[in-house]
Length: 305
Image (cartoon, rainbow, N blue to C red; front, side):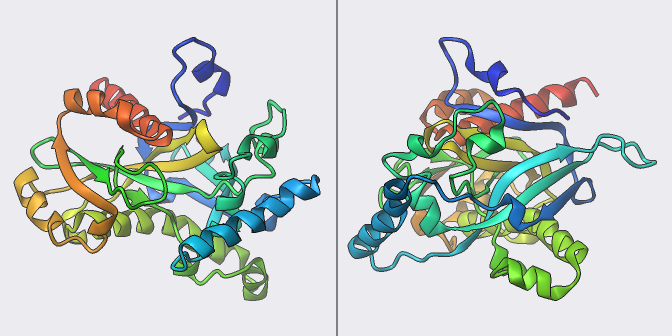
């Protein structure tokens, strides 16, 4: 397990459109992933008044264009700490630093046409993104029993990357564990309990996303392994990736997909080989290209263990 140096990823002319912020090629279980949920990891408003005001202006305009937009709460990625071999079992561990943000602020900062102005020139990653919403998304590399990988083609009606190939995924949800504000966490008088719930939501949410987007029963999915975090260069959007085995074959999964709950977000499900995925990856958003890179690193490590 390692914290990737962004400079490692970005100094060559053929720089990929992502950074690997955290690499866990052996895969981490829920017991190896902890969370510190604290307002210290919330976004800091930008000091430029006009730029900060554009957050509300952009959201108001979007709502006028689409009245069904919902301003849901999201966990904000504020960095992480490696805790390798901290306990007697010597298993690698990571602690995610999460704050609170929402979809409105994401649209107004990361998706703002002036999003680069929200960034701070700094080699410190957290300082660099301190003025952006940076909600932590999630994605799953799902392997079928006949050794194929599931890839969705996004609908042309979605807001981000219409028509692109993606792994199934979405976001862990604060409200799924009862969090609507930091005050709730303070009032609960048990910070450790809250953090444990948030940590479990990282794993529960990716199962929910696969079930909703692919349509397979949760009982057909093995426990997810956390394999790292990638962030696309465009809009600086971070995504946590997981590897999940499914005990169904490709043909069976296609039948479930036709009845998927969130099928409107995608138009087609592909079950592909590693070779095919290499070709399709160039038509993925940067963060999902990073997810594929994390999966390849996991496969390489597995070959030598």
